[in-house]
Image 1 (spheres, one colour):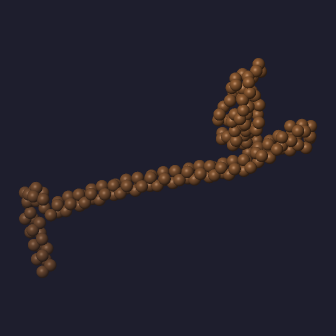
Image 2: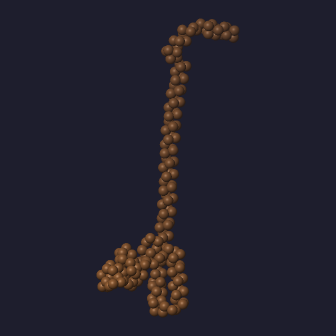
Length: 185
């Protein structure tokens, strides 16, 4: 029987003509339709995967940017907090400096007071606290607080600082305390 089937297959294969093959191609045989359907599905799958990759890349970039912004913000916040604490501590030491200045005015030859004042000025300079120079300068409301006026003379022009009642100090670019001054009219 196997021989009969083999013979029948041979007959079937031989009975197919070239015309039949061309007709099958034009009419869309099941084999051709399967190939086209598979190609369409593949194209759709590739397009879907490309869309997913683009979406995930976009999400990744947004998360990376957000992480970088958070890092920068935390660094800025830490610096700001440290600066605020430093300014608070510095303000606590300003009365000590005022007392030393007053002591130096009373006894300018006292080496102990001079040494202490120099050490405190050095410590202030190391942490970024500087004295606002006022005498002979024009009045600047950002740095000076005028508490009194005096008549202008030959040595001092109008709106010039004549005397300093209390020293002013800056911490970096921020005024810790404005200088209390007497201004010429």
